[in-house]
Image (tube, rainbow, N blue to C red; front, side):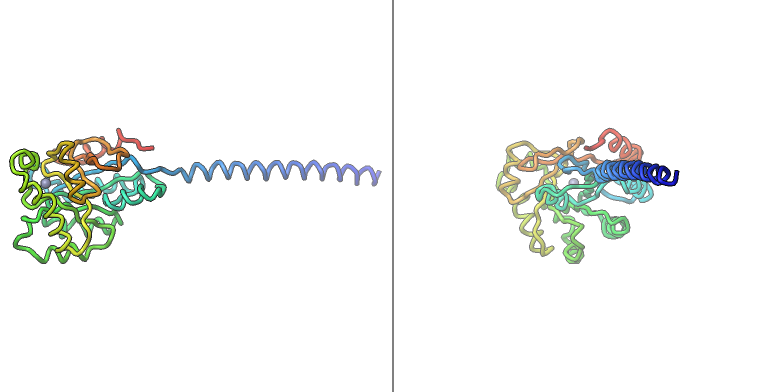
Length: 263
Ligand SMILES: [Zn+2]
């Protein structure tokens, strides 16, 4: 009887061992499945690029500070938020993204950039690109020192000398076109003390021949305002941006983000 019990126990033990092994294997596999899910990655080649102007609530292109923060909160924890330069370099280096990339850009260099936008983005730890046209700072050379001192998550790009209609210049005054696109980059680099690799077409006016010129002028990245997602044509053509404007910029941002579920 005792021997039978020992044998049974032995069998039971074996069964228990088998159950235990199957159980551990199941947990291990589930763990593997779960970890694949939780570590889903993105190649980041498709991005949503937002374009803001002033943040003081006055005029069509100037949204209120509280609306701006609401938009940042919509984006928080859902996207990796970068400057154009950082996004571009990560994709070019083949780095993976744990969340879809979202790029913030600010055109024309309004005062609110320094007073409000940069401190706010710093709190959120979001990067951004600021497009400056040089005439704006003719009487404010200190602004260039401030720009040069910004941490690497922030990028300064050129938006021409005089916020010119580049398409018109391309057709009618090629010399001025070169000045606006090429010399603005050189001067900005000199004043800020950093390489300038990004260009934003003023008013969003551009064509394919002009894009070739921008590349020849030394820009790695160029952006328009064509209001659609930017895809992975990483060479030579300009990236599209969504301009955020009044009225109701928060709903507008919500719609853009809802219809662009990035993979
Ligand atoms: Zn502009």
